[in-house]
Image 1 (tube, rainbow, N blue to C red):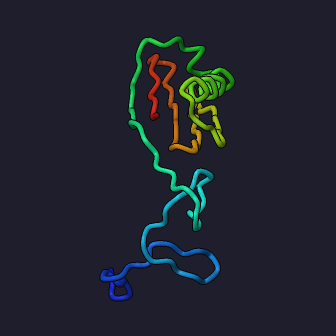
Image 2 (image 1 turned 135 degrees about the horizontal axis):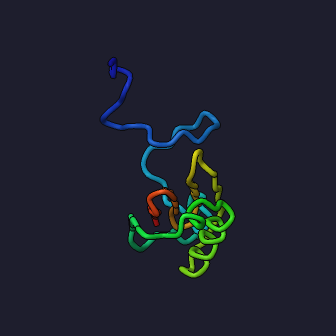
Image 3 (image 1 turned 180 degrees about the vertical axis):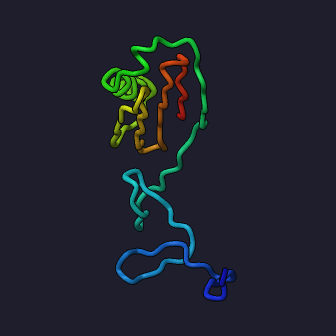
Length: 121
């Protein structure tokens, strides 16, 4: 691998898409944009949880609609901001859902035959 083009002393961390390369890590505001002068920086807080739950009803674990509702309900109950989500039924069974949160992300992956759901919150 040729890494001679990489500047390890002063790496380019962000390509702004208009030919401008910004060095350093940008501070983020509440809407996900770069903090402008006089604007408050947004600092996320909390824990990242990976949870496996066994003994769940197979019909629930195989229902895209029920898992989508569970994702919306979970984020609402937790006081989080769900920006978008997508659930996809898998073959022969199971559902995967992923949601983008203002604060982070959330995902559900199911195995109905085993009665298992994995949550990433």
